[in-house]
Amino acid sequence: MTEEPCQCPDCQRFYREHDRLIREFPTLKQQQELNWASLQSFRTLCGKVTEDLQKKLSDLETTKKSGVNDNSDVSIQINESINELENINAYLFSIEALMEKIFEAKVSDDIEAKFREVAAELAPDPLNIDRIILNRLFHQTPDFPDKSTNSN
Image (cartoon, rainbow, N blue to C red):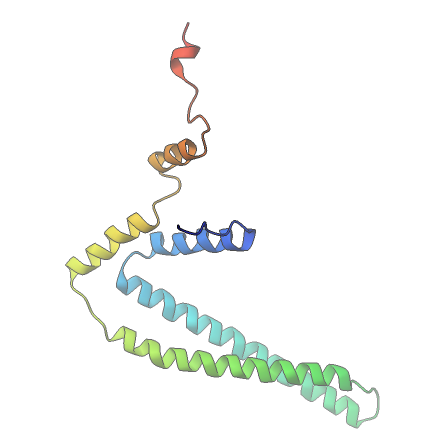
């Protein structure tokens, strides 16, 4: 017995994004590039937020030394966040090292064509008219008004 896919909004959003990425990037090379770009954007964003938090922490410590305000709770939170982001960045760096091996993989045009074929099966275009008709049949809703009942 197969388990039904989760229907919560988060999972549904994930399924839609998953299928979109397969449709829009249906080859091995495109998936490699997509994942590399995604990883790099994640590392860039994480690094920049870490830098900004380090600057904010430094400013708070300067303010604290001058005796103006005690922001120890805020400083602790920022420091914990910096530590977490540094851990994430370390993990991302490890993933990057592993992904470099993925880029060493090259396949023939025939295999890239097979990727496209399988991608179309895994994630067909939801706006394709055949897909819309099939979805409506599954949901037992009429696809189009029956022309035989409208033409008297």
